[in-house]
Image (cartoon, rainbow, N blue to C red; front, side, top):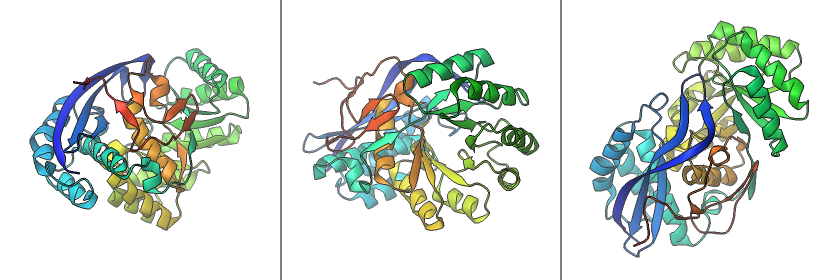
Length: 362
């Protein structure tokens, strides 16, 4: 099975409500998608969100990287030659991790279809079902409380609460949400680089003293402030999850070597796809450090690829794969079954996506 063609398209999926963090506000998913067709006629699909504030990738840069660099580099290669394809993919252009992830997942999708089995089984096959959290966007406190109660009513038992814009008011927000949802719901806090190290230590220390039982705090400080991240990790009991500070296996190794965080958040768009994410998993497993499988603001296509990796690996103990639950519609056919907080893998080969609206059947 050889790569015969690579096509690029675009999708637009409206969100139920605007997605707000300390870095940005988004009202609809506007992503780049790719379709790889093999000489057998079989197809594989991938997706990449233009998340310039995090990865530096824009709509134009993703399209250009795929069309002008990645496509000519891997066209005609045997799909079974995963290592060779990934070598070409990662050396034909520097950075551009979202574009690489988009093509990477389409290649793995085809590889799974070539083998006739679901991708998660090829990658490890550890479990068939995942539980994801649901993100609570940055809003006025009363609105965040309402959103939290709505999430619990829908069956979500883990909330990821976005903070980082209000400083000390973040404490009031978390306290109000904890009071509203009760003690049996897990709360994760994501500052999206919005605090300084001193702020993070002060806020997390108060949350601990007040017994608000925070499961973890994600990326409390700026991505480049590794010393600050390490200081926060050392000063508080709350587990610290490194997100934007870890793109590559090298980043993960440095974070873990210097004890700058307790946990690692893996995202395909940061790692350049499944191939790079597997390397981060291997390093984390060697160090005995658990990982979360996360996503950017992605639709069911890219989140399905991430779910396959999360289901495959035991070192991935937490999932933040709520993209499909934030979308107003599901424009795709196939993929894992996203049942609110539950993600259930099935026996469809590859990633399991059978159609993408950007590529209508001819």
